[in-house]
Amino acid sequence: MKKYRIIALMLALVLALTACGGAGTGGKDDNKVQGVTDTEIIVANTAATSGGYAAVGQPFNTGIEAYFKYVNENGGVHGRKIVFKHVDDEFAPDKGKAALQTMVEDEKVFAIVGHFGTPVVAATIEDLKEYGIPTVYFATGIGQLYNEKAEGRDRILYPVQPIYLTEGSIMVSRGVGDYKATKIGVIYTNDDAGKDMLEGAKAKATELKVDLVSEQVDPGATDVSAAVTSLLAEKPDFIIGASIQQTFPTIAKALNDQGNKAPVITTYVNVAPVIADSVKDAAANFDILGNGWVDFTQPTAVKELETYTKYMPQDLHANAYAITGWIAGLFFTEGLRRIPEGTEITWNSYMDALESKPILNPFGGEIDFGNGLRQGTSVMNLSKVNPATLQKAGDTVTGGWEEVKPLQSMKEILEGK
Image (cartoon, rainbow, N blue to C red; front, side, top):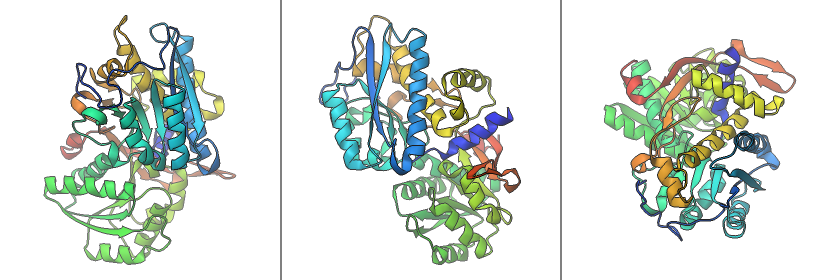
């Protein structure tokens, strides 16, 4: 079980991934049939499997492929095998757009599964809507995916992992519910991720009548001392580090250099051993917290892991990106399973099935796509940097985070449950 908790914490690194009853999508064809034969259902994605993001894209796609292999070896869905196609877009928006066009217009795939990376998703989201093609699981949390009542063209987007807008609200809830904060500070990067987290935090702070102050920094900035000085001058008693990857350690170091003692929380994307290692000095002086969205201790997770490890290469058993790929494959397939036997498999019948009732993520929480809701995971756990758990073997770092709160909804956090 300890191993599974470590895996659960690692999962937080993963980038940056409805009208029922036959309402149309507003795309090129509301009830299109493509990529479906008597024996196959063809799906695809584009993801960076070479270049700087290959360490994310390769295991992510391996996880998708492994889940489909599991499905196919156990009879497929409605007698059909799932065929997964892929194009390496190298994390480049122009290549992602070109590859998507090829997959939809030439390869005639049925759906996009595991649409990958903030720049590519942002560049192609309108293309997806224009095609009207169902797209399940995004390896990003950009705010364009969020919708409380998706209709028409917006209906085709099905996010699973947390959206930054939702996460910003959850982080404010943590400050108020767990730390009794009365003034929350946000230091955010001037990019989609940072601004979306800020927007979600502002909305929740307004709802809870909590003071919120904020300061902006550039993504990748190497000196954020001026912004930190201004933020600390407001005396916040809880701080949100609304930044992904390389900028957050710079923020934590600057807060430490200027004597901060308030707890600091950051996005699930940063809950990784390498981040814990880079902020360990600051963690000696104040709590550094991070969100997560899976729990491997529940019975459904234990059972699913048994299947996962059977179909996944051994070197990827504890790989966070491979596990999220598995989840992407699972969510896509669940929609197919729900289409009644004998019903024609079309984009509309598939989306109706996805929206018919909440889908359980066996690793934690349900996703409800009904009535147009598109918010990704809305229950999260909480972890804290613990430098004593860091372990290094060559260039590999493990550990560094420990879970301190289980998966909870915002209501449960605020009620102290």
